[in-house]
Picture 1 (cartoon, helix red, strand yellow):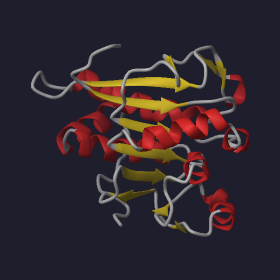
Picture 2: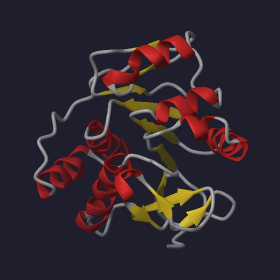
Picture 3: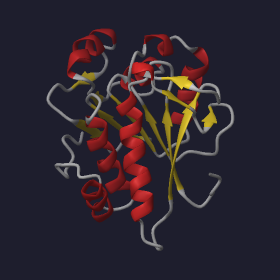
Picture 4: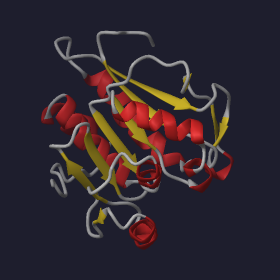
Amino acid sequence: MDNINCHRVGILIYTDAEVLDFAGPFEVFSTAARLQSSTDTPLEVVLIAEEQKPVNARGGFTVTPHYSIDQHPPLDTLIVAGGVHTHVMHNHNLQAWLQQQSRQVINLASVCTGVFLLAQAGVIDQLPVTTHWQDQTDLQQQFPHLSVLTDRRWVDVAEHQPRIVSSGGISAGIDMSLFLLSQIQDQLLAQATARQMEFDWPQQAEASE
């Protein structure tokens, strides 16, 4: 996984990350990579954690990341998984890494409570975002400078640099990742990927601010 002529998607995972928050986006981009034509920019998707050692996600699911935050190739898109996130909010290494990546990537996205980590890092100030319905009130209270939208599967802030995309909980990360894929490559590949996954995708952004 060292192709420099590709669009590389990194997914941040950590202890007690929600499994579908990272596995869903991983499936979208890995499936799309298999369906690409020879003329498309190659896609690559990798899992990244603070250290390159097995991570215990929620439900006892153990996964080994491809890279650590200290040793990974350049990313074009970064997706931050949700889960039991409070311990990560106070992890200075991860917070500093998120701030660094926000200055380097093209697209910065979050699934579910992953948006709390971006808010804590100060990289989505004054922007509209969303998260799992159960956490929307907490997000708004903890970060009153955000505009938390309550009726969206995902929210796209296209004009921001980097582009900021956030999604609701768990399965909504698949919707969001298909949308990101449509922007990174094209709508036809996103539709083909959704069909291959047998996933009912609404095929349009829920919100563009």
